[in-house]
Length: 114
Image (tube, rainbow, N blue to C red; front, side, top):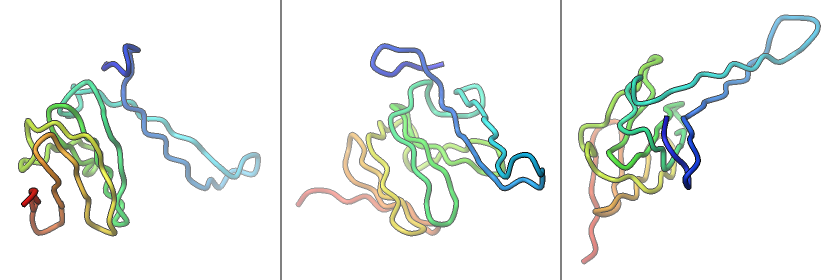
């Protein structure tokens, strides 16, 4: 469990999908994740989903991607404070404590001030 402005919290992802049941057309499933499930930290600073369906979580100690129900740390940003995530099609723009990065399926690119 982490904190958000002093309040205890943990990451909750809510997935809603169509159901075949006659009573309700929607079913809501909640899954709770902490660093025990592979998040890089107990504090979550940013969450984003790309157009390809990948879900990312930014934390003070890195970036993780939800892959087949498991959180996987993105090695290129391990240990880096991730402040903001912005989806850009299938890619992800990542604002960190050391600059701006573009994460794609092929590579992670760091942009720096001239």
